[in-house]
Image (cartoon, rainbow, N blue to C red; front, side, top):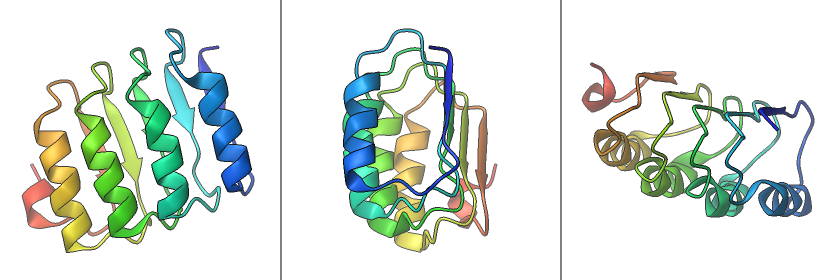
Length: 126
């Protein structure tokens, strides 16, 4: 399993099933879940698996309603993803508080090279 791309709305049950199927995967390198109707609570479910994906290099969550709470969950897990080099969060309804949480996590990630966000806070612009 090298990459997973989903292009449909995902319920909490779908996310829990995805979490179960990818947890601990050493071969998943890309997870593309753009436009899947993931809310902040769904992001928390997803984040429970993300920290254990040691080979994940690309994560796309663009066009989901993650909000500041989802960004907080992501910020806490991004630094535990050693291979992550690309993070896409365009149009995720993340405000200044969420950007601060993400900035903290991204700042602890030595490998993250590409971070795409719409209207990023100044602290995230490099």
